[in-house]
Image (cartoon, rainbow, N blue to C red; front, side, top):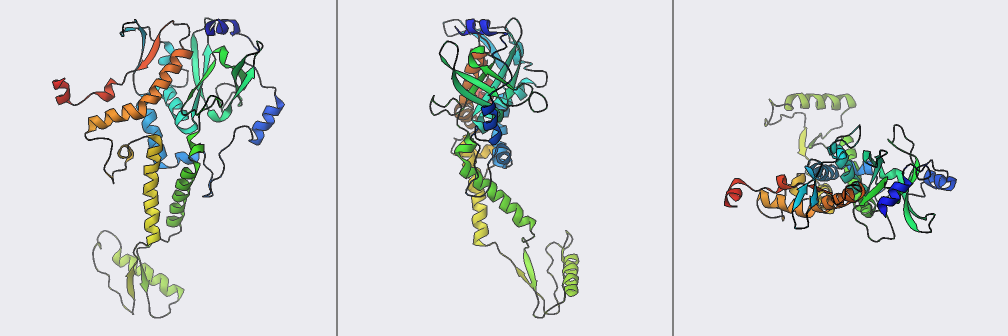
Length: 373
């Protein structure tokens, strides 16, 4: 049925056209149609760009997306006995579009799922129905609705709310799911009533907001100059010129590598008082440390893989076992989602052919384990 619908609808200008729904444009322009991420109690606004400003978020997203994007992808046909017969490799696996490589194209999908909860993939087909090129759309510019078609059946309809040009390679247009020109890959979808996946930034906006506010607080703290290791105290009042002179001479006499560890010599009643870190500052640093662990937990990434080495890992002992655990519990859900979506929507004319990621390179053990096997 899907194949027949695709053949009948190909080339139909009704399925891909400029959006003329003025109410939809007005809702989109006012921001009411997308459920934007609200400001958090910490007083900061959590967006995709602000979240990526956190080093832990950047590390988790790039780690997962790079790990998946650099995996080999094979095409095969199951023979019914559990074996896989090699299949002609689809062209789009090596050259998805004129601007991106396979790694970039896959990276975009994984990053969209991790940050927005859904990846939207647009497929441009040639007159024979084969995939000519494919693009990953910005989730912020795509709206999904359920609407009745001419047969009285509900189906998903996608509105791409951006003009073709510098912002997007395609759009704006309205296209149905049955046209096989667009599909989505959801991360966490709580129920079928809401066709989009749950945005991690929206679900954890308070946690991300606190992390962003903490990072901004640290930048303002150090930027204000209130991070001296000690102060010079004088029993007498000094003028501004005298204070500047004392500061300059103290720095020249005691600063630099050559004076490292040398005791300062103070005259005129001056005394040096070292400033220890306050309990408030210690709690601030502990909060920054906790935030890294919390972000790693949200992405299901072992903390030690994003540079969090202060604590022992509970992901097993041995590099090989930790690698297997990472592939099994972190990468595998995304791998299988993408394999299912690509096989279903991009290989509709290839019979039972499927695509599959090859994770052997990540799962291989050390030489001793290989010899024992």
